Amino acid sequence: MAGRNANIYFPEKTYNKLRQVAGPKISRFVSEAVEEKIKREEQHKKEEFQKKLIAGYKKVAQNKKNQKEMEIWDETISDMWRKENNNTSSARKKRK
Image (cartoon, rainbow, N blue to C red; front, top):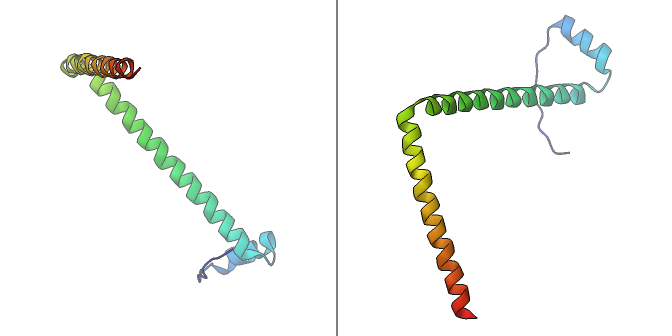
């Protein structure tokens, strides 16, 4: 596995505990601990982002003006989709 060296300072007490737990494989132990911490941080950020999205969606849903505008856009997009779908079907029939 490719990697990089890094000098890390531990207070003496922490280092002694680390030696007891990890033995001679301190680098692997620290690397795994850091990876675990990074995963938790990324998960936390993802959850916070999802909470913000949900709050935003709720706010938009409560706004009647936006809701009405969204209905208009939904209808417009549906009409465009139907027209496009009909044009595609017609083109296929003409080829046959």
